[in-house]
Image (cartoon, rainbow, N blue to C red; front, side, top):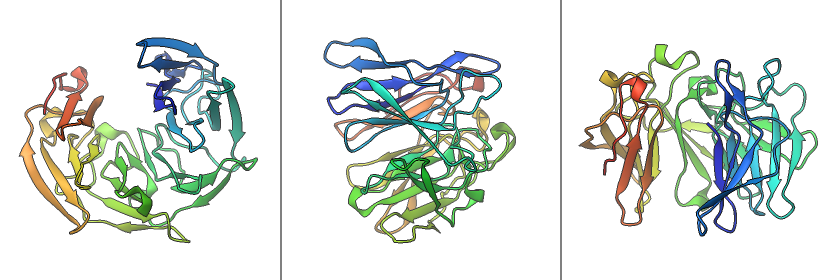
Length: 297
């Protein structure tokens, strides 16, 4: 339950994770995996723990870590931003204005061309009342600007987000998910929202809805610049309601087309990844939720 992002030299930085269960506590540890040596090594710890954090690599090679639950039962939500420098092996702490509630767990974040960070509302099982926004972390405290127009009250539990190709267009698509509330007690939505971050006043506009409402879906950019969506369910871990049929979005036509039906439910703890040969591999799922681990192409 940590966060991961690549460093400029190809190593992987992994930070946070589970320090304890029931209640959940976040770890302060950060580690680096070297693909050449196949070895893990510890690096400097963060100021506080982060369970379900988000990590993204910045344009200068540093890595930003946001949100998560801390190691403190009394103040569980980590409202700060920390930025790791692989050159100095240090973390730099940044804080929002006191009236900003912080970012939700596993917040969907995107690095913009001008260096600012965009939060599109996507999250993982967190009812925190915070709207999609753009923030500029070099300021102290961090400045935020709300991005209006999102459906679902701006809260998209277990949705998927992609930076639509080409990246230079700076358009972000927010796909599916569920409304606020316990995810296994609410139905998924088929809403799709798109925002143009190059607009002087960015705002969401409705996109073509999915054919099937789904949450815990995976979205993958394909080589032809279409968007492949697979997996998920009408409810979080309800295998009988799993969405086995995938769909592909064509930005040129704005149409979602149905594709082949998969054989394995892909719910919580599932993933999908584009391979070098153009195939997409899907894997994983939570055994306790009625799914089981199996590789599919």
